[in-house]
Amino acid sequence: MTRTHSPAGPAPVVALDVGGTHIKGAVLAPDGTLLHAESADTQADRGPDAAIDSTFAFARRLAERFGPAAVGIAVPGIVDEGSGTCRFSANLGWRDVPVRDRAEIELGLPVALGHDVRAGAIAEARLGAGRDCDSFLFLPIGTGIAGGIVLGGRALTGRHNVAGEVGHLVVRPDGPSCRCGARGCLEAVASASAIARRYRELAGLSPVERVSAEQVQQRAQAGDEVAVRVWRDAVLALADGLVTVVTLLDPQRVVIGGGLSRAGSALLDPLYAALTERLTFQTRPELVPAELGHRAGSLGAGLLALDLLHAADPVGERA
Ligand SMILES: [Zn+2]
Image (cartoon, rainbow, N blue to C red; front, side, top):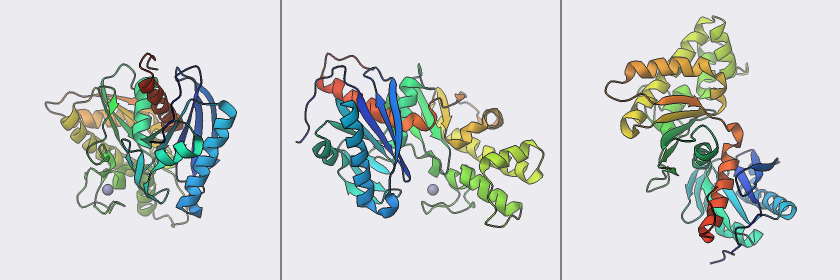
């Protein structure tokens, strides 16, 4: 066991949210307050080892500057928090990387490894839109659609660390193929990239003409009929996915994050209406936008690091 022990004192924690392009770094005070934020390039395009090297180099730089008591690292993909291993990450090219143990050796500090969306869900639970809420679904909608289920203050991992993959609920069995290999997954019909792609197809735009989901929504608001249809279909698919979630989990709240949540009431109002229409015996959950934006993952990684310190120091107060 290479874990070093540091007493939980006033020292901050360093947190990293490692994405395919950028690593979002944060430094958190022991009470969870954000002290510093900074980003670095992941350099995943240079291979899996380069992504590991840049992650550790960035952590080391922040550690030298801020003298943390622990480090939290959140990564995308299939993450086994218990063993501190990234089983697989398509974005980073990692397979069975013992991130926690390697980082502890590199940094000489205790390290917590988490899954980026589950870490984000924990951050929303304690610092954001999931406060005072015992059960909620964190639903980031961006290039893809992810999900983090929080029950009793804990993020559900499942036996194989893939619980909460709401983006791969099949909502349109004859729909477009999904990168997971199935057809008609929620992500393939209602993610920001799916909305943009469908609009481009139906509006007959050339493949090089770029249009974002945000622009589709704006065009819908301005009365563009194709945009209205694409936006409405995506909202209805989201409502169908949420019906399944509500039926299985009976959550108090659904916290919508990711780029698409910036649409605000243009998304939430019709989604709320469509969900209400579909529910029969189930109780409609609250539908709210996420509060922490792109910082959720790094804040969550920091909370995991703080939890690690409190676990090592039983008299410490939970942040
Ligand atoms: Zn899928």
